Length: 378
Image (cartoon, rainbow, N blue to C red; front, side):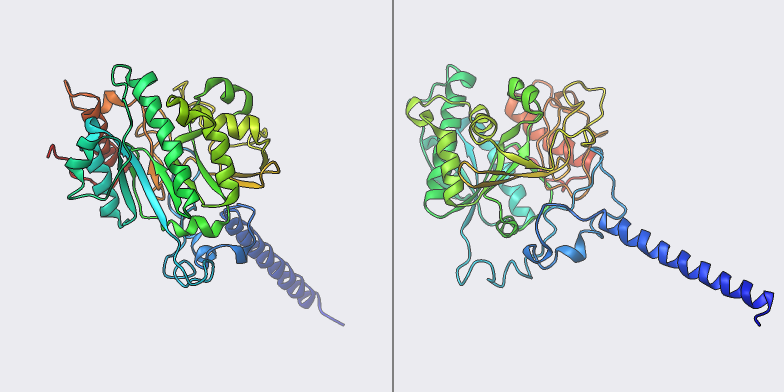
């Protein structure tokens, strides 16, 4: 018969083994909680994904309450071996629009992207003067606005530019070019190989806006930003742009932010996963009423109307808030920031709107740990 001591030792060993098993299970679950749930099977993601999605968030914090793991793919793996694209390398363009009044910020934007390692970015010039000034030192495309309405900068010229932006984006998609459309005052903070977005398999990637258009935000809980999006050249994305464009180009007077959100919410009848308005969805908590309650997490959707697959980036990856710097600064994994209403932080008294926007780059770098772009008035 076993002695009492032997039985005690046996029980102790069993308890120890069970404890270790539970600890290992808990550890594995804690790691899996970092996995970026985008609805893709493991073999549909870039090769480098699984190894990096946990390490990418370790030790980081974010003012929006979530540390992004997006854009962590490696260009040296599946993105460069041609497995997803056949023998040809996909043609991708980054475009931002300028006129003669925004030349200096166009230079800052272009040089910052160049410093990060991008080589596919172009400045789309909407007048001859800006093109003449930039074309010798920057990659430029001339797409002039006829009869620019400078006497009405927002409801006139601004809407002419927005109409052209939709039209030209569609033109590139029709020609087989995948497009990242972005604003000149968007602040890029790390290099993300754009081929990775193609491998994720969605037709369109949108960044969060804040609350404009307000009526759509109240009804649907979120709106997307027309000033930062990636579009795959596909039948579905072209059909989407057809909806967005409508008669804008003929009218030469459209607000593309309104048009994108009307198409996305009213026309496409998107089915979102997970439900962005579920009770436990992560939202910004802030005493700034413009930011308080804004959604944070990424989600994806499908429209059966045109078989369009959409992903909305999380707010840490594509940061968009009013003020709240540095309290709500994103993590070091942030790709792009779109700060607004932060003039009180800019030490540029007497400067015009363009130079306040330029100095905001420096403010961002100082307070949110950017890449330190040098500013000049050359």
